[in-house]
Length: 631
Image (cartoon, rainbow, N blue to C red; front, side, top):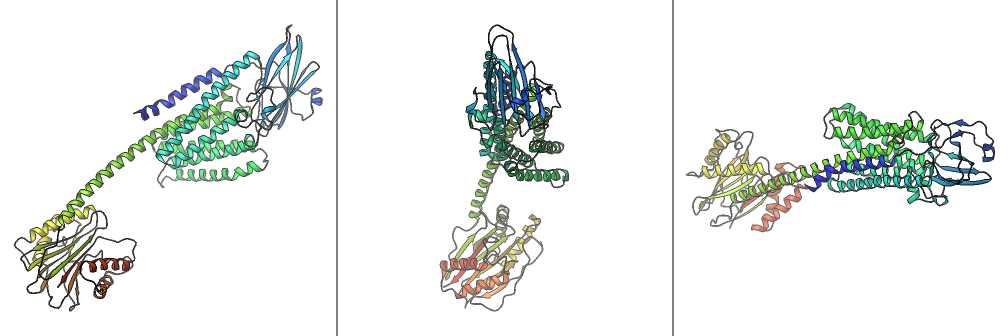
């Protein structure tokens, strides 16, 4: 119940916390009163004399797309008051390669540097983006110059704050990011736990995707450098692109494995093939992005990410049309993610009006997708767990029923062999599964006469065992007032033919007379016994039980005055995938003739030697071997 309650409330609670913290944090930031830019790559001495400055459309967050790899920004802030004006200037973004800030306040000049390739310890204020304090004397003007170097999108955020406003801004930002990444870490732990429970491939892909997405967001927002990599490094710039490719690859592989459809749905499988090719392409691009400076690689990376997202949404729509389980959740979550990517991409290119929501569209989209999908995977895991529990319960019941049927089948088999003068009886019974379809038994007619019966029901396992019970009942009924093996099989055949459809059994019945030293045989499609030493060739046949209701079974009388033993067996002993049954019967005769053993030892030796002869890793059917040894 607790697991169910958590799975229902977690997305709602996390979503409310995320939205409240975002609204609390995203207050209006004071913008610079004037901001101009120049794309000329010059020194600060030259740029101060530059007259070709152009106004920036959005003075708080200018966006230059891919037009420039280096750009200068200029602004002036005046202090008309009679007291000094103290404030803090913030100049982002965090993922800029290098930012140089130069402030001219009268004769005083201050220079600051920042960016992913610059050590965090050199910053004047320990803030996730470049932030530096300034003091403007009374009735003076300060001129700010910023030079940005980018290898990706040229999107910057510049704001001027009073000291109190900056402190409030920092508190609100870190509260927002603390809540955000705490939720993200909780989702990663949740997915790791789900992976432990369901052990599915798509859960592993999604857990890796969440880890990659969390690291990408940490780097892009400057938190990774502030808290984990203050000296800068590969991961904060070129490594970010590799990490982004890895994240999208995991998302693509997850989406491919989330749904299964029949081969008849050609479009779905073609789209999966395209996504497989896209995944391989992204994997191949990883070393290229890390080792080489590829022109426009940020644009290429963003295009690949958006293309993969659209493919994923397409797969989701196809699954929704096929009414696949959780397809609607899949469509909703990846649509939110794809929309946030497109929104962020167009915003960076300058095609959309500026807003705080656009600035944080990727964070919102990733979190929304992660919340929805985590809830979906919790539900899927819960259902899979219930399914496994139900399957285990059914399996336990089946095993219990099989054990009970096996006990019933054992009770059908004789608890002990009958005692006959001058005859030693040895039996070995080895079912293929826990329960088998072979059957043997005895019916004592008199002190010197006994019926020996051996049967093999088609198939093996529980069904064959149930049919064997019916065969045993037919044998017991047929022996009432009858000792002729042929008549017994005839009666059994008539009864079983009325009970069975598409079922049959082989059987052999022998009346052994110790006083006369004879055996009267009748067979219903069963292999004839091996008599040692060999007598004249035996010719006897009869149709299997259950096929022809009116068949009359003939008999054959054997003279046992010179015989030492008779071996009755089922065809599981002599059948092999590589050899014929006839050769198996010949091998059994040869082994029994050559063996210098008697009684139980002889039976065990024959089973071992026949297993070696079959050369199969496992037998094909149940095995029964019954030996009558004359003393």
